[in-house]
Image 1 (tube, rainbow, N blue to C red):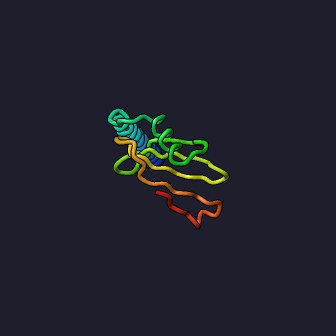
Image 2: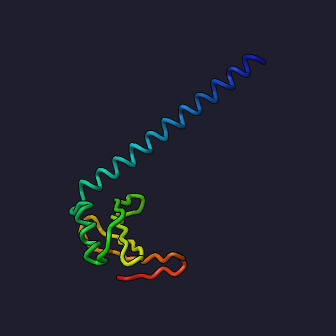
Image 3: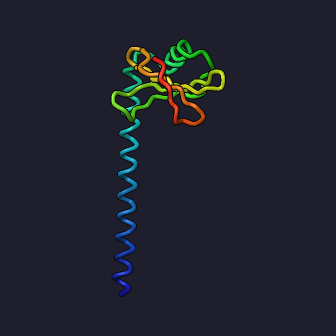
Length: 113
């Protein structure tokens, strides 16, 4: 009985270690993909923010490279006169791909392109 319990604990520890290693490898792959995308981008995040503010003059409150979509895009959130906008830009060209206005209700999203 004791050997079975010890073996069970060993097996559980081994499985936990294997899943941790897999999670680290996935994180490293995501980081590598983000790095390669940033290196290939023709505009940087600061330029993306400037382009977004030309479209919606306001205050940029967040900006990031979204590499969970294909192809990766810059997402810039801007507040203007109490309204929140999400501006999506192409990191290769700086072109604005999409502008979405988010209401407080979030049920009445409006598009501005």
